[in-house]
Length: 317
Length: 248
Image 1: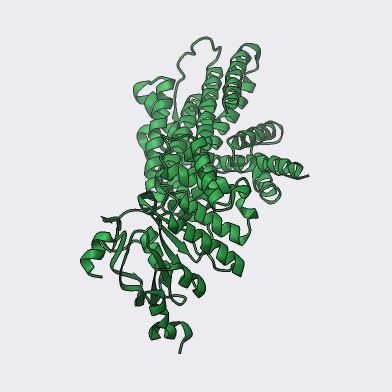
Image 2: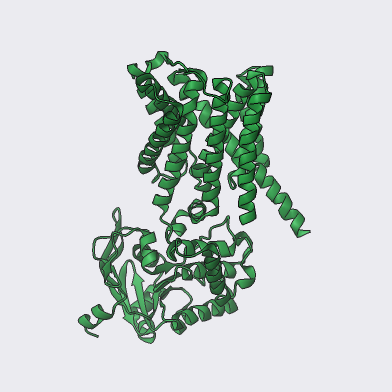
């Protein structure tokens, strides 16, 4: 157990160091633009997995949480000129509160009803923001980046590093949950909620906890996007594509282990970026759909499920 | 048996419990006291309300205040997991294991959430779970997936998981249904062994020899009403019980 932890934190430090070094070595800004998007998807899909994978509550509201994160940052910048760390911290708090409220309202529903409720949430929040004139309304709002602080050469490089920190944070949280009694409780209620209750698992409280953590991370991941794009409008901040992509990444990677959504987000994120520069940004939605169908049929437990099955088969022979 | 005596001694007191689903009355004014350490058999034809009664005790169904009192405490407003922590454990008529886990992990959920997960380490919980599996004769299956278990092993696993919550009252809901003769004896011996450890047990069962051998007292439900309660031989000799079962 201890060696595992050492390896994990060692890998995290190496990952962050690699990002820092790359800001010195890589001159082409495009790599940072693309890398940022992939890192952002890793945070979102790991956050999604905490509720959607561990607890089995399929959340279609990723774009709602992401968009609220974006607009929390927009609000803080346009009203107070708040610095980036504060934007992210406040977005996380808002996300936690939103997660708690949504959880209280919807987590008594199960299966498809919960999923539908989360889609409704996205639409309600998007409509609210669209009609909120101070936040730019339907036309959107532009914001100015402050000057970049060293050692970074550009603001996007700094955002990439910040998003990498969020990746480490979200993965560490997901890993902790998975290996602790919280994870076991979530897994139990995913398998059978009544049996879990009758075994002493406080199902509603655990689901709420998962929803709060997941919501906080999603909003935190959305906050830097305001500065990344220097512009926000409800149509793109609350785009349902975030919900669908993140769900696909988590399911394709596999939701039983925290590494699943990381693998899924890298795989699909890179594919999307490649398609966007080679063919068109619209094709990637099509490819996403096809990959999801293929994986649901061929590998319902995702990529990590494939590896586990293979290892299981080898172990038997 | 005066009522004041039973009130003091009762571990579980069901008082005037009525449960309706729409216009259908599943339980009609059921009252019974169950004493600590008692082996209590619950019988009745299909649809007579046995499982509904269990659901009302374990908290899956809500009931009117003070209709279910456990250990002197009104538990009607408590969700199932709090009742489990107070000491009520159950198995299910159709086994409901945690399918994505191994046998021992199933038990560790119980140990985690009822045994003070902050004070004990995961290793302690594993040891506790292993001890229960040994008692249940499932130790060699500890690391097997539950999907690979046979029916009798699944039944035993459910009882083991219930035991891992360290209950005062164990409710076994048809733990022997669908088992062969020797398997029935196996599960029955297990339940008798548990009862010997001063755990109060309510056993719902259709297999009459098992109920007769196990129970100190039997209650028979029919259409949500108690039609007989008392010594096994008395209940079996009761004309209304015979009528409910045999339709004569």
